[in-house]
Length: 319
Image (cartoon, rainbow, N blue to C red; front, side, top):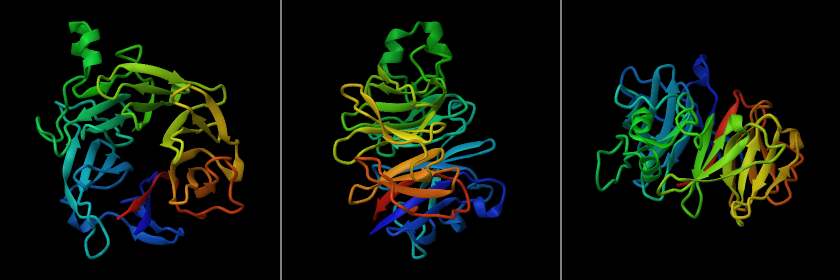
């Protein structure tokens, strides 16, 4: 059964907590995705961002309320109430893991390990996956070959534990302001560098920098998605209120959704339905908009309108 999972910006009002909401394929609200009754005392779901189902089938969610930077693990199968029960805190910030700070997203690589971009440290951290053959699940992994081979001992000491893609502060080929990070079909990692107005590509095995994608009107990219069909990488321009298509092979970057088309303001998460239609979170108008994924032509009416909060991430779940 297909259902939309949508996260929202969240805030201090109770209705903005536990903010992964579920909608049916037609956009009808079905309630919330996570079972709060199963949470341990003291754990709050107050600033949920990216989420992904892991290789073990469980649901992993970025939680970043105040000083509690965490990736939470929920059971992949829902209970009788249709919600995902809590399993554990899979990763959290502590003295031995300072790199996890205000996580924005979660992604599992082809290697089965967990990759987390953190907004306060501007790096992509790598953590042992739930089915790792070596290492303890959830613990920071060693630095990748590109960082080990190219760095001096002094530079190695400055890199935070678990760093896979470094901050620009630690490496000129790193990221200035990290946002979404996703893997392509070929296994490389693509990272939105908001304040560099670009998307950067890193070798998915070694962490080596590959190339950078620019367009004069692609400003402040935050969210990324791969287009169904041709595999083009879509990047939302937050301040340009537009979406661009990137040919990751040739490097060509071209406009897809024109500025403000369909009422789009500050595009957030993007996803596709079974027919290949493109759905985009319009943060400032509190809507989910639908577009032709090839032409960028918007539907006459919003797919979902009148949301109570700013929509952030969106994903179509089939389970």
